[in-house]
Length: 554
Ligand code: TEU
Ligand code: CA
Image 1: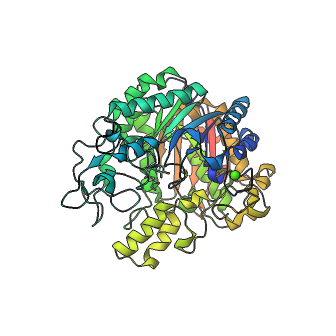
Image 2: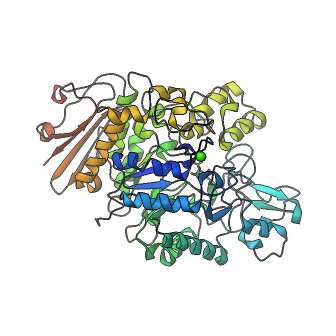
Image 3: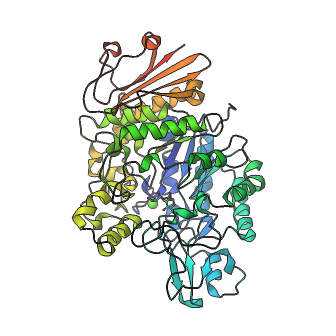
């Protein structure tokens, strides 16, 4: 397997709005990020993935971009960006930008022109269609509820928006659109950035003729039908030839609805497309009847089965990204661990061990390294995120669910769980801002915060630090082949890695009680690389609740 820096890196995702506020307006910003680079350096990460910092009216917190080549007012200026980039580089930290080009904001100048008349030269930059019998052109539902079409009076036509009406979809079939995007990417590369995370890049090639889709509920068709379209690989290969291949970048595609077979193309090891993709099957396993809005926990056997499929399926032919958390996902301790005072830290470390010992490039989402947990939402008024708010009203008002049936699931899965401000210390507002935070701080910041964890040796933070250091030390953690043990056990996640005669045993007890487990002979006098409980004997064959350890043998 070919060795590269991006396979050996650990990425840290920053959601700038919630990371650190430098000027007291309650909104995180670029200078805030610059001021925390030493914290990240100390954690040991190699790369920052920055969620969007471009100009945006913030309908979807920066994922609706009105100018790809300018900085959002609240986040600072291009000078602040340059300063952050050079300060990061001075510390050996790379910066990967979010590239949101499936859609723009409806306030982007391309869209303003496109909407102005039927014969505008930019008309075909977006999807404009006549209505069908006085209604939307097809049955597609938006990912954010409602129809994926919005009627526009100016020309008496509809435009397509797979996400919010303020996020019109770009028409990638138009070569002029592709050229605009590739030129814009080139200018960022020339500035010295180190890569791109590509937002919903799997959705850019729409099915020919935009046909109706199979119903996803009684109201709308499933716009997942636009994923992995006929020309998507062709467009990404063109992007690769014209831009990516000219620089030494890390590229990761956010590929909604990707399958293993598709991932082998997107992330192929010949390097004709992207370095790796985010797949979402594993974080969909705790969904239920009410779509993703369910309170059930992640079931372990299917989780093992799924992650194993990806570990083995991409080994040698493509490359995995490893993640449980991002700005769209609730906190993993609530989904897979135990947020109680007794087990929160142990279970957070157990989850981290399980993920970080796999093959692929790990991603840490801000606050994950502290074991941050979900927010105690009480009412729909507590939400900021349009997805959560729209889902609540669509499910209750249009689909007839009782609020009491649906609210707990939305509270449990809301994207706002990940977006509450970073908990830096135990001062007011967790040290995130001196003003009023744009989204409420989790009240548990007094006990869960970075200042306390950085100096405490057995903290979740220092455990992540050690996991990252191990990955930088042992090739087998990056490149070793993966094999699952005890596939049917509903509580233990046990696997081995193997590389050139070296072996690794990873043992995680995902239950709140003791379990018996004895490592195989070959590991009994191996070296324990890391463990989340250290006052008991591994060879007594008893695993404590959420105990995890890793043994290396040659
Ligand atoms: O998310 C797209 C995506 O795949 C959705 O399924 C995502 O999981 C969504 O949040 C549903 O919960 C990307 C971004 O990560 C997200 O923040 C944006 O809102 C979205 O694209 C539109 O740009
Ligand atoms: Ca600010």
